[in-house]
Amino acid sequence: MKLRWLAVLLLAAPSAEAKPGTPGPPYFTGIYERVGRDGAQRMLNDAVGILPLGQGVAIRACQGAPLQLGFGPAFEINNLMTGAQGSVGFECLFHNNGYNRPILTCRGKDGSAFTLWPTRLADLNCG
Image (tube, rainbow, N blue to C red; front, side):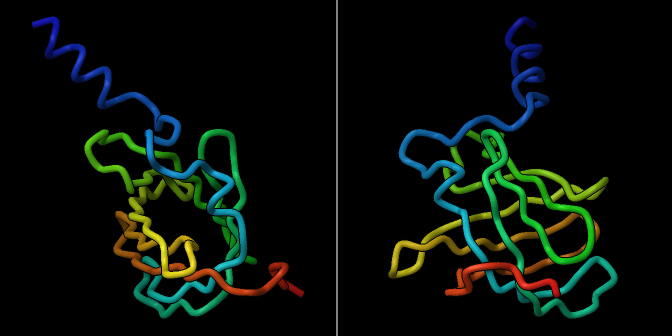
C-alpha cells in the first residue's frame, strides 16, 4: 500500500530538473521557427524564443501566453518535457540536429501540434 501512495506522489510531483545525460535549460536558449497548427487547427508559421525558467524553459511567441515546460515526469523518457500554456497541457520531445542544436516536437491537449527548429536570428522581432 505504501508503494502505491509513493507512486501516486511521484506521478503528481511537478517537473524535475534535467535527468543525467540530458542538457539543462540553457541548452534550449534561442530563437526558433515554429511550424504546425494551433488548437483551432489554424496553421502556425512564426518565430518563438526559448529562455531558461528555473529548472525548465519558457517558450514565448509575439502573442499569447508563454508555454512553460519542465523535464519529466517519466524518468525512463530522457527527452520528454511537459508543461502548460495557460490551462492547456503540453508534451514536447526534444533531440538535436547535426549541429548539436535542439529540435522540439510538441503536442497540446487542445489538438495543437508543432515543431521548433533553431534559427540564426539574434532576437525575436515582434515589431
